[in-house]
Length: 579
Image 1 (spheres, one colour):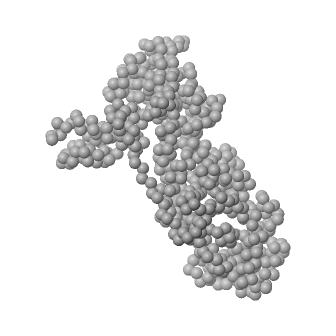
Image 2: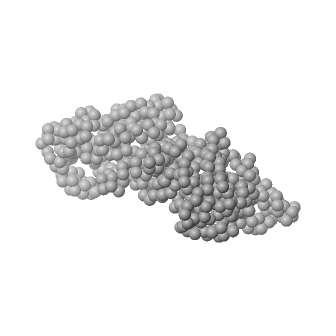
Image 3: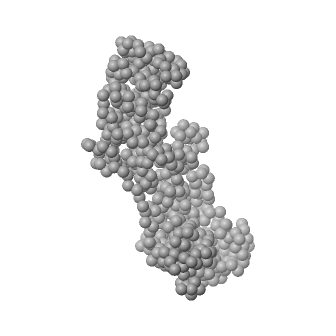
């Protein structure tokens, strides 16, 4: 068939495919995807790819310049059957755990230095998913053996964050409650010759390790080791003077695995146990003891713990304990996220951040404030899985997953940023009817009645607010459409002062002729609003009156993004979730 004969039908199909592709990809159609769709239906046109490709580029360029609302509106008119055709999601299933022979027991073990952040959620989500799959046991263990790095409120905040994630656990344990137990196992290791009390200066001890040489105290008799241990417990040493060290292989190729500290002196009150303890276990000692005594069958954590795994295996071997399955997933780099607790605390104290929920941060409290859904975060980590490859965290992917979850149920409203005044002439009254959701009429609509107002020095007319950038570049006689209201012909543009347009009806055919869609808010019946952004900025503008019905929920401000609203209109504030 000759291309010219196909032109009308073909170009209509191209536009349908491009509109549908744009909706599936957040307002941006892909030229190659549209071309593939066309050739799949018309393989006879492969010889004319160059000609077709040029047409596709033009159509895609035009569509990508439009708002998502305008794209949906056109597709609804041109091919409504495609509007509700969803992109098929492909989710990756986690592999089975190795060597499952009995009840699966796993854990998440946060340090209570602050609430949870995004980086923690990978371990939480994966462990939780496996426990659910095998109907196992999930333990939350607070690793609070460093009293200098504990935020007392974090114990409760972390449990609140887990509740938001929908994680169900069976037991909560604090390591600070288990010190006497750790002391018993330390004594046994010293007695068996698997550990020693080192009195070397720290730097000297480290230098000896680098050279694979033993500390002079390493081979002292166990009686002397136990005597020194008892002296530690009764506070005869000062911080830095002595430590209990677990023996490993001094010839190990990795210096980090050679002899490691199991206990050290910390003369600092613990938020929970106060001054009760003076000798504190290190991470590797307490974790190895607890993982065995709590019956862990599978330890799932990042590759950054590989050295810790090698260290902890020595304790298992010395005590003749069966070892759990250790699984390590790849590094996740998060270059655009503020996660470090010390930086956040410093920022809160200096006033840079208003608290743990400041949306500049990567805490779960910040995500909650922004209105992101826990299921999006869970889906993100489940799709990545437990692969050992290193990755970079993608906000775009998380936002896309979140949008898929909320787009179908989130009500739409108008928000005009950087507002300027537009006066509509040649009409006495107008009534806007805007659906709360374009794909779900049952959710209802918003109605706005507009009337002529007379202001000294201005031509009488119906005043509305529109975004300043919507009028920039618009020329007299150009036609525009106020969304869900009416069509207008531009009379004069005077920014940032008052611009004038005249009413020319309500025929939607104007859109097919390329009329620009402009969002608006009543000049006389609105709420001033401030929207806070994750980069620390903010945008001010006005919202339509019906926004009062959506307080404390997530809404979509058309052409702006998804926003979690505060609980009051005095003032009206919101936090941007994402575009």
